[in-house]
Each structure stands twice: as structure tokens, then as C-alpha cells.
Length: 161
Image (cartoon, rainbow, N blue to C red):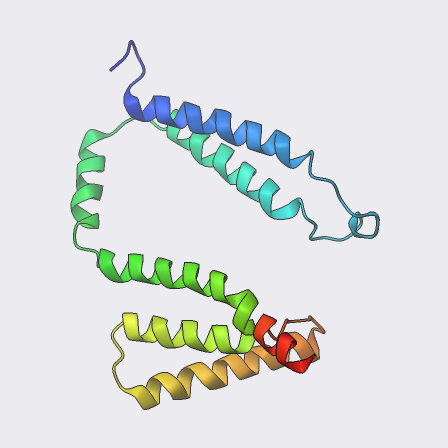
């Protein structure tokens, strides 16, 4: 403990400073002329992240310490399945990396198959029968109903040229 500030409060204060600086930097993001009146712009997500960071750090700073509650929280978190959680995070990162190359359809099917496998499903027909239709229906909704362009992927674009 440094003076009246413990390590966690100091961390929350530093995170508050970072979130405030991030929020200020968010306001510097240039916006396209045609998107200024849109509800979702290039500033929306960074601004939301800055506000969440500010809110959570203020909560951490203002809520009094409760060592007993923290110990109970640590004990309750000890029983979680951390390996599948981290495996899903890695699968999400790989999904983000392969999305541009393979496109929405193939990358999403592979991601869902990997996710189901990580979560313990071993029947291949269930994995296939649940990931392919879900991806196809979602693709139809996005492209046909909402008129959102989804890139077919660099591999297919190079083949079609």
C-alpha cells in the first residue's frame, strides 16, 4: 500500500487516465462526409470502449475494497474451464486472420466447427449440420435482407479474375 492508495486503486486510476486519453484520441478520428449523420461511424466503437473504460475504472475507484469478497471471487473463478475459453479466443483471432483470405462463408463455417469442437461436440455430422446452415442463413440475412456486402475472400476474387 502506497499512502492511502493500494495497487488495485492505482491500476484503476491509470486505466482511467488511459481511457480518458483514448476517448480524446477517439474525437480526433476523421469522419467521412457522408457518414456524419449515420448512427454508426468510425468513431462509434472506439468512443463506446472509452466510455466503458471510464465507467469501469470509476466503479473500481469508488467502490470500497472488500478483501473477503475478492477472495470469494477468486475461489469461484478457480472452477471455470479456462482452457476452452482461451482456445475459443485463439479461434476468434484465427477467424479474424483468415476472414480476408477465405471470405465470410468458409471462414465462418470453419470458426463454428472449431468452436463446437472446442466446446466438446465430437459428432462430425452434428458439427457440420449445425455450422453450415447457420452460416448460410446468416449470410442470406446479411446480404439479401440487409444488403450488406460480404467479401467472398481474396482467394475467390483472384480465381474469378
